[in-house]
Length: 94
Image 1 (tube, one colour):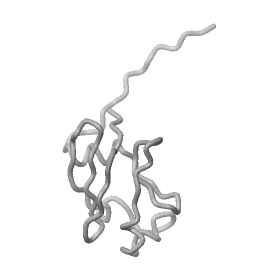
Image 2: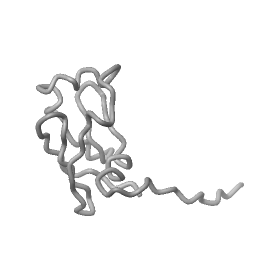
Image 3: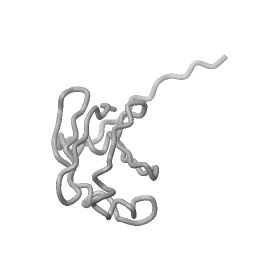
């Protein structure tokens, strides 16, 4: 599946509006996905949470402390579809 996130806009109460490269978009409540512990603990402070950015090289969202989220999971939530399975490719041996 792997669709890159191309824009993010924070809303109130840990919600993010995400837009993917295929023009699918929607709102995700991050507080229902994570626990505010470990690398995610700074995100509990809403003034820090709203500093979310898109990393175009990785195709996902992140915060300056290194916290990021899997775009496949976010896409699955927005589209209400299961995360796709990846077809095993044959490996050539030398």
